[in-house]
Length: 275
Image 1: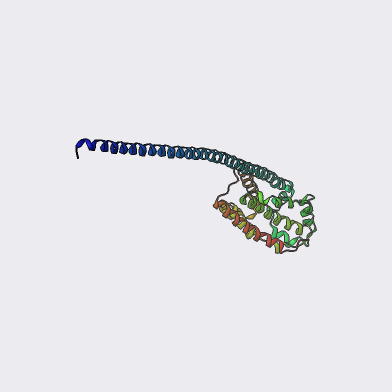
Image 2: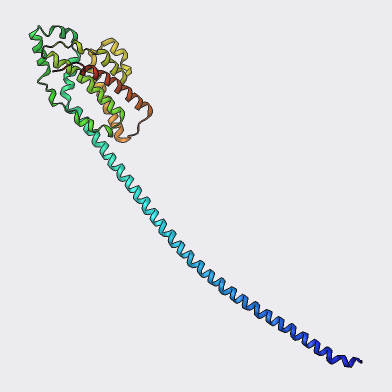
C-alpha cells in the first residue's frame, strides 16, 4: 500500500481525534462553568443567609445587652435606694438614741448626786432617821421614774454601731444603779443589799480602762465625772457613725465586753426588789 493511500485515513482519524478533544474540552468547560455557577449561587445564598443570621444575632445581642444594662441599672438603683434608706434610718436612729439620753437627763442628774454619797452609811441609818429620809426625797427633786423613756432606744439598736449601743447601755446601767438606791432610801428602806460597787467599777473600766488609777484613788464616788466621760464617748461614737457606719473587730469585741458587764450590773440591781 502506498503512502497516499494512508493520507485520507490519517486525516480522518486526526480530525476525529481533534473533534473528540474539542468536544471533551467544550463539555468539560461547560460542566465546569455550570458547576461553578451552581457553586456561586449556593455560596451567595450561604453568604446571604450568613448575613441575615449575623444581623439577627447582632440584634439579639443588642437586645440582651440592653436587657442586661436595664437589669444592672435597676439593681444599682435598688442598691442605691436601699443604701439611701439605710443611711436615713441610721441618722434617725442616732437622733433617737441621743434624744432618749437627753429626755432621761433627770435620772442621770440624780445618779450624779447619789454617786457623791456614802450609800452604805446612809442605808444603815435611813430607817431610823426621818431627817435623812426627807433629805433623800429632796435630793430627788420630784424625780419620777415612771416618766423615763427606755422603749425608744431599743427600737434603734439594729441601726447603730455595737459600740454606741454598748456605751448607751453602760450609761443607763450605772444611772439605774444609783436611781434604784434612791428609790429605796427615799422611802426609808435599807439599800445595802443593792450595793454593787465592784460591778459598777468593772463596767466603767471596761469602757474606759484609763480610769483605773482614778477609781483606785477616788473610788466610785467619782462617778459624777465618769458619767460625763461616758456621755462624751457616746457622742463621739455617734458622730463617727454618722460619717462611717463601718466597725472594726476590736471595737465590736470591746462592745461585747462592755455589754457583759452591763448585764452583770443590771442583774444585781434587778435581783433586789425595788418598790
